[in-house]
Image 1 (spheres, each protein chain N blue to C red):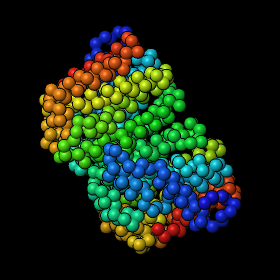
Image 2: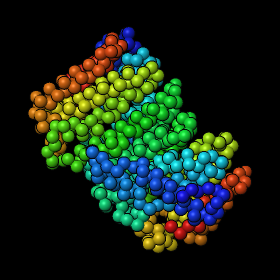
Image 3: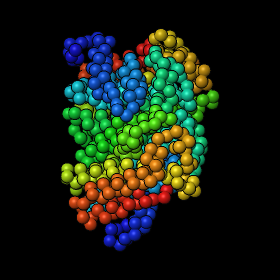
Image 4: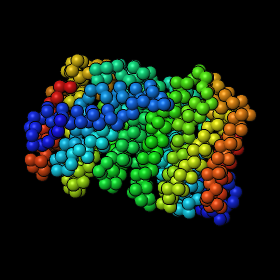
Length: 302
Length: 302
């Protein structure tokens, strides 16, 4: 089903269209079997192909489109972002980390396949992602290298993994709101921010000024996403959010609702939405989808 | 201390010279602190900077040199290979994997820093490695992309991680020697093989025929390395090998000595050494160091 800016105005239909493409791409690209380790492949497919929001590939796709690039080119690197996201969920859920039983409405990877296979599934997903970007068709080699450097930095010790480490070491301690922001910008924000950059690079049409504006958009949206995640942990329904509600509070995690109250957290999310929209001002109507996506991130119920 | 082909004929001095450079490069390149996660950085430095053979960067360096490339260019990608190797050791040692207490003569990472930090240290080292290669100075962008694709493939589900998965699922089961070879070629062999390719790519001077010959060298040497590792697990001294001897047998692992007898395993290593040397025939005296390295891999006592 083709997705074009002109024919579909409804955001849900647009998102569903991209999700279908991403799902088909992931299905096709993931190995189906392995002489070495069939269970590893099964665990990888189980985790990656579980229904998800696919927000990272969607951000890459929509950003590429906003710059009037060929959005189809963003699919392969977008799927790479989804593989990295899937790895991070598998490892975050491990017994020595957040010890979660439920993810995307199913048993977590280690509950379904055992701890060793879950660790290895995550370990394998990282190089699969970088290999995908390295060989992404139709994208100039300089843009591929820039994507790899951007994504690698976003998920390294000063990004996602550093944020997860800070998250674990902060359990049971009271953080300031400023410190919680540092944590979430690293843990969740940086990969979302990188997703926007990857989409911009895929377009081959972003100058330094556009990249900088889009980066402000990605940073605000990335933090907003986590604020809303924290809110949904309090207010969400297990059947809708697909994971155990209240798990953060139970684990003694610092969250925006506990630090700012639920209303304060909602105001924070609204302020970040405003920042994200402001960053898009220069793009005019081309960025309408990115604006709608920012609304979606803040107003979602899952 | 400069290392040049002309002035130093002794292999030990040559290896020590490269190791010093690699160590200095690693020291300089690794973060020393982090606002987010100081313990994570400490665990990374502890694991990476522990004394090691540095075989992967040495292979990259010596291969680049054998092709009359500027071997200094192989240092950054060589260090990236070492980061990936360090990550694989940290994760292999985890309680749900090989459950080892001792590595490189010290407490394993999870024994020193706890399981969550050890998992995250490994997780962070992977993107650090890819970021290093993406930004390696002095290397053409096409060569950097080819390195990333090669290394990513070597450590993915059909390479290192697939091999580790097969290793774990084979514990307590009797494998054929052919199947054990498949396991070791994936688990240990592929990254060593990729190290040779990375060195060749760094030189900017390898044609398809040279790459293919060097790949046969790397494949034979990579498997020989693991055969000898298995032998040292039986015959080695804890003070020399820096890990718990007999650990493989205790864990019910399939090893070459148990499948082929100790003598059979030694003959296998010798045959692989011959294969490695044959693959280098076309290179003449330029490949002398690579030949000595192959001897070193087979004749080492640690």
